[in-house]
Length: 162
Image (cartoon, rainbow, N blue to C red):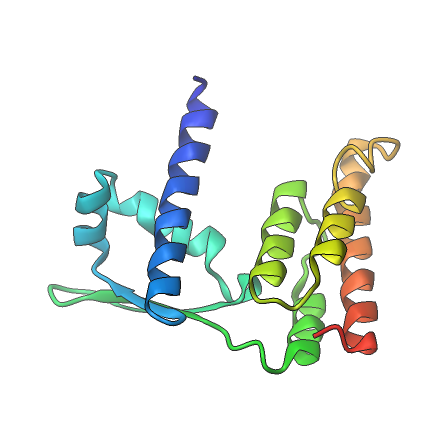
């Protein structure tokens, strides 16, 4: 297994574990970063990396932390009752460049929050994939993907998908 593949599977495992905790605890979990890292037998910095890259507001979560001996990290799923507002907020926060991985993470989150149907999820995954955008030169591909994603979100919000 390549080094990048190990890191990817490790981050995926940490993400899955956190998602399970969030589901078990009705949308919110509180962990001690060091204890959680010890339990999963990973470095605390790997926990921080996953929380930072996969549990941001952009991904539909609110993260609060407190450092020190009695420190904690609280991850709360943002309520999706205001679906259209959330879609518009996400559209405004999409960066100028969006990698395939970033897009897929956000699309999956929209599905988990039930802000989009399974059919829309599959269409978004397909239309924003590198395979679909392969005719566009690599430097411009992430900008085009960002523009497409933003426009899809705006249309879904306007239609009231959320």
